[in-house]
Image (cartoon, rainbow, N blue to C red):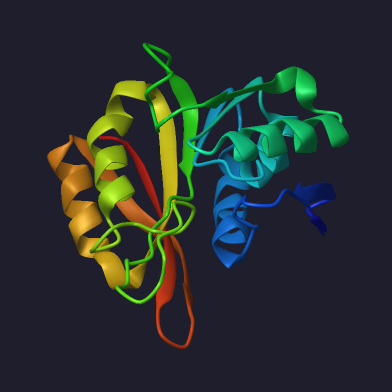
Length: 196
């Protein structure tokens, strides 16, 4: 089992759970100044995003489709002395959250485009265009966002940043890119959205 240190937290990575990478770190860096109140961490993986913001939060709800990721998140919160703030559940995006509102919603979704030559892994596979989870998130996020709340998510520049910004507008929210890093073959962006 591998582990890493980030922002003073020890992060264990269980087998079969998405290991934190540049996208995770970008999301934390973008969200840290916005963290307060009730936080929702979707596609939580190891729990690194919610864990790094937990000291500033009243509560952190973490959701992942992978039961091993939810166990991993619980263990990382316990290991770092934040377990009392955590509610971690297995579920598909907003599915287990009926009626709850959040001050900050975060998501590091699977956003990579599927390929014919590589087996699909739900921790990174975003479907044919890399938007399968992103589009569902954008259509539902407003139902769970407090009036003064914010939502942030990561995506690749290869799967339509402008398309995401248009969908955000269509849902009655305003969106903007708040962080961008370019790599050899793609860029990563963090998009923030809020009510108009």
